[in-house]
Every structure is written in structure tokens, then in C-alpha cells.
Image (cartoon, rainbow, N blue to C red; front, side, top):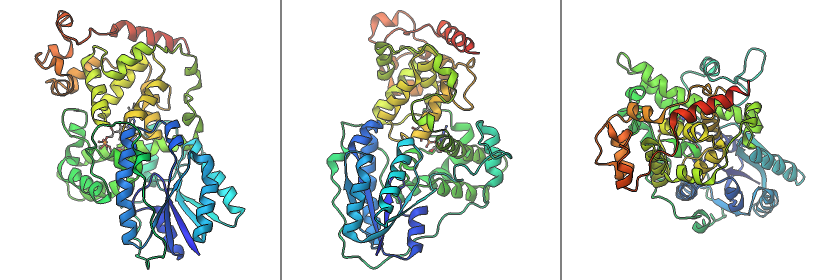
Length: 467
Ligand code: FAD
């Protein structure tokens, strides 16, 4: 009999908890991946992310084959049809066990529960493993066992519980080649719409190379450089982490190695990056423990009463980078042109939409998912609810970023704005953040669509009224 290893958002063979466990079990392994186009559409999967998955699946299929493991493809419309499709694959390949790494969205959990119950009726055992986080959801709790809802105490407890040095799973062995052929992977399912060119090379080796290059070049000055969008001060590893081409434990291990050989002052730079990995864990824990956040609900129920606006025209101006606020427009155009946006600007644009425009954060969350190559439910939802002050440990509602000041601070010489808003290229470093009013009659660049001061006051009043 065979064990089926079901790959989802863990497209790698190194440090893969389920794959490692399956290989220890001893049965020969078969792998599978499920293409579910309707489900992807429903979950707002971006075209660029789908293509990136395709590129990485091709690499994974080859890597598995080198280990003697054939990758089969199951194609169904959505999750509901998976139990039957998997059963049929299991029956045709004599599979008795399915191993997979847990995913924490509400629909994903339901899918896994359904598969488990339907397949067990045919004597096929399903086993799910925690793999997406460094520490498993539900294991980092307060003394009374309740979950943390605030990041800083969570991160302190996380650090206390972390095995140090951090470990990764041993490599799996190569098995004798099975008389089962890998399936072709139909590219058309992954080409949903035109997408920006992908600047991340596919495959684990490329991802790992990027991780070590970042550790060598930028990790030691991460804290100083991470907020400046015109430079590559952050790792840009998020597309790999989102689909599991890289594990967070591999990242942590590299950070640990860097900590072994540091000069004065570098410790805090590296710890700052580790903190971002903890944020990632934190939001996955929240997603797992508070399923409402993946069902389009605010973490803080009372914020549902805010008079969110649903103005399609205003929303469209934000989506297309035509708000008249240069740093916001540059950021939105970065998203449209590259499929990625710098973290500082994700906060700035999200806050502009949810506070200055008072448009429902769920519209923005959805638009990000539809365009990000690293779209990741837990972090995207967490980031949006943080910015909109509706989430766990969210920014206090009265701390509304002024996007012009953010631009002046983090893009002081306007380099980033010039890159993405060519209409403003000729302006000097001061004017580029606040173009002179007579410019709007000469160019197509719009005047600011909203008064930043007044709209900020209004948002604060609405939030205050909830107290
Ligand atoms: P680095 O700074 O090098 O950080 C390393 C890794 O840590 C990242 O790759 C990421 O996996 C994780 N990380 C970093 N910051 C955060 C954070 N604030 N929350 C959770 N994890 C973090 N991240 C996504 O991966 N997918 C998303 O869909 C996503 N949507 C976001 C939406 C909003 C409104 C906000 C404010 C943030 C969002 N983030 C999201 C978090 C963050 O912006 C990105 O992870 C980061 O910009 C990726 O760049 P990097 O790989 O260079 O990060």
C-alpha cells in the first residue's frame, strides 16, 4: 500500500512536516496537488500568484521525481468535490494513508474535516500536521490557557517557548521509482488573467538562495532600512513563504546562524526581522483560534457598526493609484505593476482607504488578495484589520497616519514616488509629496481626492462614537 502526500501551501520537499512524517511511516509515497479553479476565484487568488504556483509546481514535480515520488494532479471545481476525487485517486493507486499540512482558513478546515470523515469510511486514514508556523497554533497561550490577542506578550511567550537553536526536519530519503507516472500539469488553469511579469525565480533552491543572500547583505541592517520603500531593505521572501516554497523555520535557522557571528548593534537588527516572523505566526494563530476573521467579520465586533462607505468611484481611484496623494498612488501602482507592495506602504494605503476614505476595509483586503503575489489570508486579514483598527492589537483608532508625512519621512528624496508616478518626476523633493495646486491644471495627475485633516477628524469621531 501507498501513502499519499497532499501538497497545498507547502510546495517544498525540505523541512516539510507532513512529508517527513509520511516518509518515516515507511510506505512508498505518492504525491498530489489539487487544482480548484472555482475555489481559487472565490478566495480571490490573484493571477500572478496562480502563475507563481504553477512555476513552483513544475520545480516540485521534478524534485519529487528525483526522490522517486510521482506527483499526481487532481482537478475539480472546488473543495466540496475533493473528497470524492481523492477517494478515486486513492483507490486507483492503492493508497491507505493521506498526509498533509494543516491550513487554517475556515473553508480549508472544513475541507479537511470532510475529507477525513468521507475517506475514513473507506478505511483511508488522513493525518494533518502543523507546519505553517514555527510554533503550532494553540500552543502559545497565557498562563490560564487562553489565547493572546495582543502581539507583544504573545511574542515574549513565543520567544520563551521557542526551541533554541531552532531546528528543521531531516532530509527525506530517495525511494525506488514506482510504476506510477507523474501527471502533466495543465498550465491553462493557472493563467487566470494577464499578470505582471514575475520577478521571483521558481523553486526551493532559488528561494533558499534569496534567503541566504538577504542574510549576507541586508539582515544586519534590517531595522534601519526596512521602512524605506525605494531600497530593497527587506527580504522579499513573502511570495515563497505564502505558498510554502520556504518554511518559517528555515528563515529562523538562518537568522540564528547570523546571530552567532555579529558585531555590536547587529543583534537588534536581526531580532527585528525575527519579530516579523513572529507577526506571521501571530496572525496564523489568530486565524486558527478566531475563525470569524476568515468569514469577513471584524475581530472587534463593535466596529461592524461603523458607517463604512461603499463608494465605487472613490474606491476605483484608490485601486488605480489616482487619489492625488503621491505616496498612496505610487504604492498602488507598485502593486499593480509588480504584484507586490512594501510593508510600510501596505499600512499607509490601507489606512488611507479605511480611515481617510472610510471605505470598508474588506474591499481593500479583497483587492490586495486579487493583486498580490504573496496574498496570504492570515497576514492580509491581520494587516488590514490592524490598519482599520478593527483587529487584534490594532493601531489605536486616533493614530491615523498622515500619508504625506509618511512619504516625507520614508521616501524623503521622492525616489520611490518618481519611479511609479512619472507625472511627478520633474518636481523637487519638497513638492513631490504635495504637488503645487497649479500642477493639476497642467497634467493629468489629479488633485487630492480628500482633505486629509478633515477626513481624519471624521474617522476619529465615528470610532469615538462606538465607545
Ligand atoms: P520581511 O520584512 O523580510 O519579513 C519577513 C517575512 O515575515 C515576510 O516575508 C512575511 O512572511 C513575514 N512578515 C513580515 N511582516 C509581517 C506582518 N506585518 N504580518 C505578518 N507577516 C509578516 N504579508 C503576506 O505575506 N501576505 C499578505 O497578503 C499580506 N498582506 C498585508 C496587508 C496589509 C494591509 C499589511 C499592513 C501587511 C500585509 N502583509 C502581508 C505583511 C507584510 O507587509 C509582508 O509580509 C511584507 O511586506 C513582505 O515583504 P518581505 O518578504 O520583504 O518581508
